Length: 312
Length: 306
Image (tube, rainbow over all chains, first blue to last red; front, side):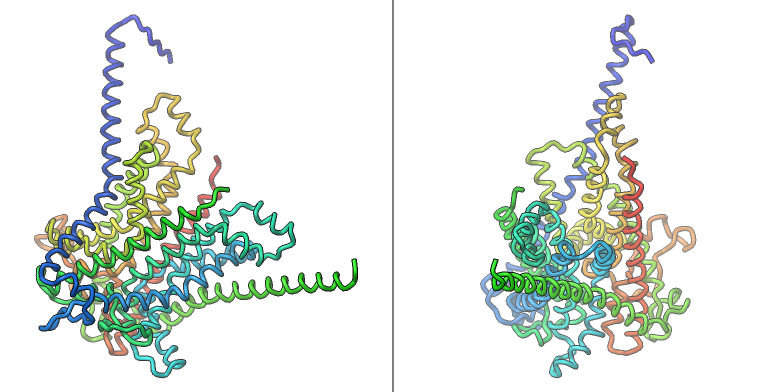
């Protein structure tokens, strides 16, 4: 094919220039469309902020922020309504704590084992099993917590009620393990071999090398994994809705039933409150609180990662 | 070297090795807990629910009588919602991924978009439900319908699709792009005829993982108002009288996880069995999808011949 830029006929050159110009505008149009698709994520975040703030404003016109933060009862559906968010926060806090006490140690140990100790056969079985564990819908974990874990725990701790934060928290912890383990393991694999080789050359055992060299070096990735675990624990809904009961209860004792921010939203959504009533607007106020808590943890996570980031 | 020093050194080494062995045992125990949980879950659901898994179970509507109750409206609802989710999430997610990998220039706007995507991946799913409730159900007036549910779940899995599209595109060596540009193709032609087709297996893996996640999501769907007792199917165009081609999207509905939630919350033993059976169906569906994605990824890695 002969392409001659200096074609003698002016008509041919200007046709090609016109075609190029059309191609250029076509390209710009497509780039614009693709940009809109990418910008949808920003729109979603703005939409979340907008709707939570807009509906909460309606709520806070009826209830003062001071009452919201300091009241010790949460009874929005009674005639004498109290709106103390600390009740729901206590449920979220206790269940998340139980979950993290299970997930963070076990997830980290699994990650260290898989990245430092295990041979490839074990890893080939373990990684898919962990992925499957992480893929099971949370409602199934809720079913498991209510019908298997609670009776089991009732045999060990005789006074345990049928709904409790303990059994929901334990199952939630098991659910979070795959997330913590896989992110931690990725972080540890990213530590270059020569750091480990230096340790072995100085006579360390595998465990000493893992705990004293690899884990501190991977700390920024581990922090990211832990923060993800915390976010999942705080935002988890169905396990708590099924197994922890939906009764608001200001307590720090995991062996009692309690409602969390998330299970309360589900409870209201299942009922028949009309849109616009104060009882209904409480779910947006609760959602706003949840978003603020998650955002705080995300910011802490970003700060931790920046501070401990290693350049190899 | 004195014999005393040598024994001392050997003792230190032996102690270190003992701790190593102990930790390996602890590691395997922790892994076993995970494996045991999956097994106990599946075994328990099978025992509870196997008896109920008759063909009737799949064609009956839920009812007050546990023996007659079935999951027809639930699995049809799940299927239809997944359809809308895929139709919404795949085009937008792939387009966004292609933009971020091929077109985006480094700068504030791109940073903002990327920060938003990683932020949205960590937002609890119930917040998506609240967003959908305020915006889709009331502001846009789409009502408590399959369309709303599909759009909500599409937003939920969008970060997953975007990230897997980007990873798939990144795996394509730049010589493909360079060759295409050298032959005079525009950027869009390169993307359309080379990049996206080669990235498709990776994108599909991500989409399947996203759908497996979406099929099990309960909280956002409850929040937008899916009902727990639906004894009818959405109007099927062509079969039901007066049903337009898109009327099914605006119909009330229920999905599998909500049916399980409803049955688990009832005290009667028989409903718990139903819940077990439905949970088994849902877990099998999810495990199949996840297994398909894992297998696809494995096949992909084997076939890469760059």
